[in-house]
Image (cartoon, rainbow over all chains, first blue to last red; front, side, top):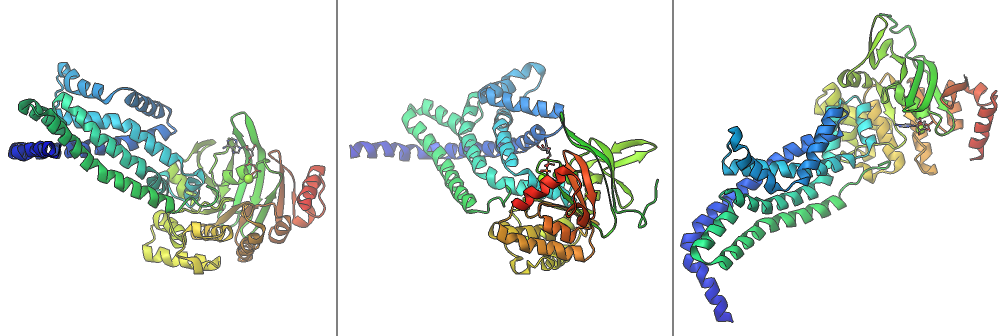
Length: 232
Length: 261
Ligand SMILES: Nc1ncnc2c1ncn2[C@@H]1O[C@H](COP(=O)(O)OP(=O)(O)O)[C@@H](O)[C@H]1O
Ligand SMILES: [Mg+2]
């Protein structure tokens, strides 16, 4: 049994000079893909949330519809659409760009709802008190609402980042050269699928685990942190 | 353009109506407030007191009617006899002249007492940090809160929070102060400290409109009392008249109920 395990590990050692650099490169792509799609989702999500909360009817309608649609269709469908579906129109994205935009557009739907819930959790008296001292709506949002909403938003937002990190693996299906695709290619070439998919799984875990720990830390910090004043 | 300037009244409320959907809450309210004067608005819960106060600084846009502050049309611009609502930016500039104190305090929980007071002058009037802090310290001293200047709202009692909220409004250096039941959310033993601060401000000659259920306090501090009922002013006059010799049965019933309380 122990010998079997040693033998199993030895395979990694044997192949590491071949796999190591390739895996390392692919992990880097996965990280970049996560950062790019998450950044896009944050910006788009905030705009969608503000749009959904706005008083302008058509803007509210558009943003609400976007959020519902983005949450209702699989990210993979968006990826295929961007990567394959737009080619007849002469719009061609490379696999990384299509992956980052597709995942970002899809996650934006969820992130918009996180922002919206966070903003709406702030009692309306907070906003009125700011308007009453003569702040414009923009100042009110920037100095009063957002700093409070961030505290509510941060834990679910970190959760979204973890989900997105793992979801980058579906970009392998549009041939983005990230960790999952590289693991699959190496597995097929080496006939060692168990080794390679276990390795890929372990790497995803090592990337997301620290994020989970941070999320939990932030959650307890927020709970201990300052709550709404009376009247909230 | 009518030039009223220092000569005319500070505040003129002109035939204000306000409806929320089908519900007509204010049905034509007029009032005039001279500089340095204090008007108390009393009336049963739900009669439109808050709505009236909130129309004065356009926290609610009146359905019809007009507000003039210091001779200037508030919340609207006028050309000929056409009135156009102001945009939010112009409105903000005007609101900066009116301090408002809420029943629920609404201090900003992410800022300490000093910053709660200083942030308005900094962002709205563009004061430097040092200058704004100095102003905040002076205003907090006025409400006897200097000892809690670094505390966050959650570590303050209700009465202390309300006093910081008053300091925040004072830092606007407002022409007019609006108080909406400033002590209604407080435990009885904390009411006095807030009323004392308001009384001190009144004695400084500040102009204020005050919604309150503290009838004794209203009599002491106000020079004019308005009894609002169902969105109309039923009776008004000097406190000695309105509170001590009420004419209308509804006002008598209201005062009886308050005293029993
Ligand atoms: N934003 C609003 N939307 C709908 N109804 C409102 C709104 N604000 C106040 N009202 C209604 O207007 C009436 C008067 O409210 P308010 O002015 O707060 O009364 P008061 O301060 O005298 O207790 C109440 O019936 C209340 O439900
Ligand atoms: Mg009220």
